Amino acid sequence: MSSKVRKSIKKSPESKPASPVSHLSESVKNYAFADFVSVQSYRRGMLLSFGKSHPNEKEFLVFKEVLLPFDVALSLQRIMKEQMDTLIDSGDLVIDVEPKKKRSK
Image (tube, rainbow, N blue to C red; front, side, top):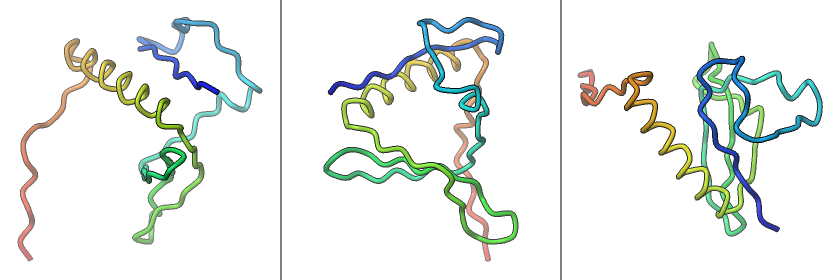
């Protein structure tokens, strides 16, 4: 079974997708914001755990996990690199390359 990853760069929410895509239900369109992701590799693929930082504790609350087969993970890596390069070249994304200074105690 071969899995595929769809790639597209959207300029605005009104833009049409590059290929026909159907959602299982309208609730799928309710995007969840994650400020944490953990990646663990196993024999069957890479497990991505998405979560949010807890406002009062020094921990993360995981709300979704996805197991990606390695062929899909490699495809995703390539697509993300291409899209990041495109966004950097267009000026839509600026990456700070200055190293962060360590705080002295």
